[in-house]
Length: 225
Ligand code: LP5
Ligand code: MN
Image (cartoon, rainbow, N blue to C red; front, side, top):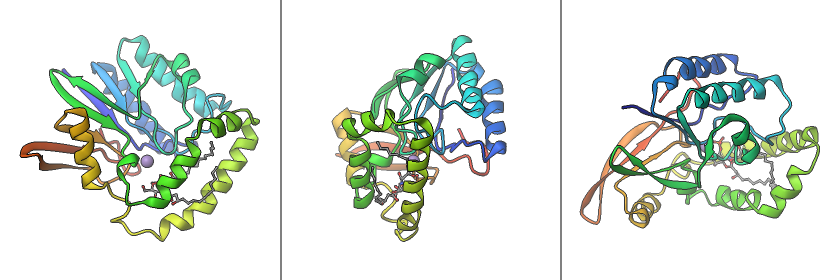
């Protein structure tokens, strides 16, 4: 009985070692699991399912092989791959889940999400997020040629880097009230997310009942699942 959770791999053609770790994980670990949940930021950037690169094809092939072997595979978009969509899922056999989703983990309910929506103290990010999630803007963006989108994404990323480096670490962590509100709203006492790159297990109580929040780690140094 194994269900695996990963997030924040930040795969890119520039980091071949991380891609190797991912391939090894898919072929040696995920293949034996009942299910695999990818909780966002699988990619450093994903600007459209029509990515023509051999890198994109390689990653898709790993997922296709896994789902064809019968491992149920699910994906929740992160803040870096929120444009991953239906076409990617169709090509790989994975299932796209809502921003936050309640799953049944061998009889235990858990709410899973990327985690960026919990960082409500980061007001500038939340405003940015609301903009890039506007359906009409995404519709327009998706209709631009792939390489134009790539140029726009690079420009935005460059502009934002400085903004991020001026933020305090506190602001970029989850807001505890937000965490508790989501647990109450979903009627769960277990939450699993990534995004903050601060792996750990947090125990606390919500309305007098014990609750747990598990944070997944990133893959910059090693595979974490
Ligand atoms: O991922 P991480 O940890 O490095 O940082 C995140 C937040 N940053 C982001 C930005 C992404 O990395 C960049 C994604 C670019 C993809 C291209 C999209 C193409 C447009 C599509 C249009 C449909 O998510 C960071 C958080 C951090 O997590 C911790 O939570 O702090 O947030 C920021 O740094 C964002 C700034 O605070 C916002 C600055 C606004 C600048 C305005 C730029 C122009 C916007 C144009 C919108 C179309
Ligand atoms: Mn993230």
